Image (cartoon, rainbow, N blue to C red):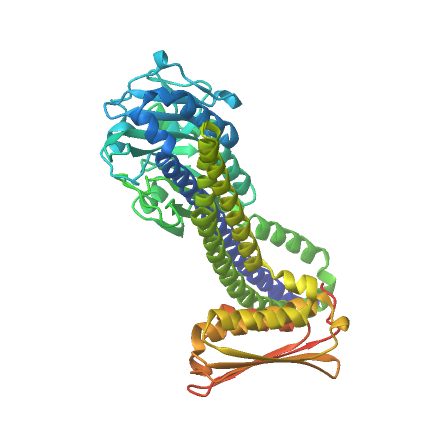
Length: 559
């Protein structure tokens, strides 16, 4: 064997070990990131589902039909019909119950597997000794008790087949403001747990739900689920005692043991709703676990194949070594470029999600506070009109209902206009830009001068839409930060491209000390560059700001 082959063989072995080490670092990083995304997404889904159900509960607790029933039981048929209809439409609640201040059921609607019905009065039970009644009856108005997940029980026995439920309860009051009992929703967990399982299947290892005592709610298999309901093992705490000690008293985190990688997150309700439960976030944790052998499965398989290949081609080690060095350098360069691109996209994605979530909350608030109230008022007036005997009264109620529906339509048009400008689709970029300037003037104390010089019929739809969004975002930044009296908007065609300039004489800002990845600036830059154009900002304190973009009239095709 030529003497140079031994050093080359040693170099190859060292190189393979280096690759194995680097691949294992990559495997650990990817596994940790993957399970972290899964646990975060599952915790957010549970929290938002709880927020939605809590909002429904508070809405029903404040209904007029409920207050009327509390004062006059002759309206039982009306409220039972309302709750049966809601149970059928929702499909998420096993039981809807109204319990008086002494713990006796006043009303109960069972879902019955998709055929909801109100329970006869003679079959109603006392729930005075149940933990959720004692917890909820002491609460104040608009406070909500949220129980842990468990299996439903009837007459002291676990219902067969198993039915996972979570109880949400809030006090109810009559028209005089006197507490008359509690309203309880038994939320069915099967759909939610099914969604969590679908998400968990996309990640490596196992992801499930663990309660405050370390028992599985949703375990790796059916035999490990709901053990706490029967007071027996197995449990997560027993299966992974070292991991449970690290998880039990912390809200979230990620760590590695000899068993593998763990990531966990405690469920906390999203949004502005508050609860009065003694312990919240009710001890429910999303836990993901990837065994060590699974973490390194890809790198181990790769290493074995490379080792076999190296032995098979021992006669060409020198060529392989040279090629390996070249591939390694190329790989590092690609990784560097990908990492830089990923960092930029993560910033944009994260902030776009924050912006999207904020807009969704605003839309939800408008829909609930404005359109919801109008729809409720119309419903009440129409119900009263149906019962009215006096024709004048009936006509007056119908007129009020028509006014309410007109208000609903007006609100829908206003909300849809916020989502997307119809002027851009119907009348083109010129009309949309002028309308944008006029709207900015109406909503602020700023005078907007719009100068346009381009052949609109030659503009592709992608160019028109992105130019409109850039100008819109620039004017939004002026309104939020510039405190300017005058703004100039110019869009003109030159040398096969569209040039955009938004200039204000406001307070300006220091470019060196401003985050270049702020959502507004980053979004405008991304719009321009994705169309093959360029974007620039010029500003200094007390000297105003100029936003400029140049976009080709024939942008590159999307890949």
